[in-house]
Image 1: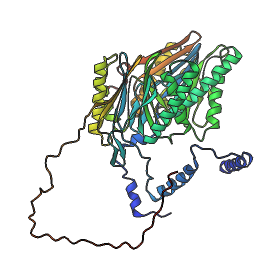
Image 2: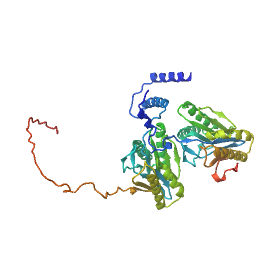
Image 3: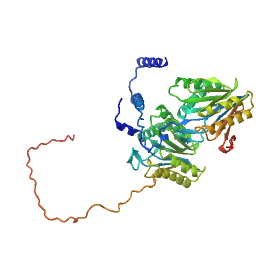
Image 4: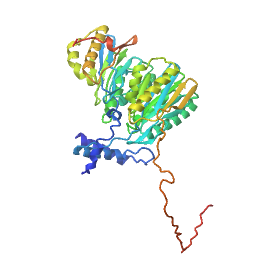
Length: 228
Length: 288
């Protein structure tokens, strides 16, 4: 196909509209979840970007799906919000039918079914974590593509690449709740330091038989590493 | 291979399902556009982006409710198409929505949701909630996968208090105490980040929104003209249009027209043009 020379003017279309007004909103992100005996600890950063602009610097990426089941969202904000809303509805319906608390594995399966069926259209990396009476604290990861697998510790999002080494070397099985919280906060801080698409505050959630405890660690309260 | 399996499935689908083409959005051109884009990219160019109505819109939650603000310029490329258009749309008596992006999309989307919300409100017998309008808008925009270019700031007061949402064309939403959208949103957000405080008084909130929109008007080429405000509180809505005429058209101080008598008349001849009627044809107009 040949085009006239004037087509090159299309590139310079309007400096009036900066690049980020035409980009999709993405939660380029760092998310993490860890199992401990009696529950799970989940953490996420709080940055949502459209291109180079931060659309929301205090996002809550830890979304409740049921009373004791949460999910961490990464990827396209629209896709993950739509999926989470759909799964929340499906799980709520299922729970009323059973007349008992749903299993974390059920929630993860619902996510997996949707993410796999529509894998060509969606861009969503989700970590499902929670507590149920049958198997206690569980973390399931559903990355882009629609695989589902249970892991004792899972990281996701664009910032996760920077902390695989830290997580692999610092994770020990059978950590306590406080150790898990410290481990998660430090891992997220390190990722936020290095990844441009992650930042803001650290949001943490602890899910156990007793319920859900939520925390926010503000920028100036984050653990300090290098003094450079 | 995976690619050939996908092709087989598509062929089977068109054979087994007979669908009448009803009205509504036709996605046929999307495939053609994708092919064109691929061809253009191969030559090293990028395809033209969708046209937007460069805008500054914003909203803020204050003590008694929300204040929404917008500029009034609508552009077609580099030309101002409308110097005083209204960007704050009615959704329900207690919920209003500012729209940035493609003007037609914001207009029609807000009208559709306003209509559906009125029916919903009659069905429930209650005043509609902002969260309901948010759900309806995000589900519609997600369904159209970003092809409806509507970036909205939705605000209102309902039985649960004042709420403010920003809604993006792909269907993601953020619930925040202050939001800005449009090409002038960076300028407006700079003002908000500097001076926003929780639980402001009405006058302070109006001044803050007015200044944020003014920052967009004077620093962004896509925004201009006047500042419209909409103050929503429990039981009352103040639609201030215009709240501030920031750009008044100037008065010309000089005139290029010459006065009568500037050029002296030396001689004057009048020659009548005599026309002869050749043919007359009468056609009656059907006024029945």
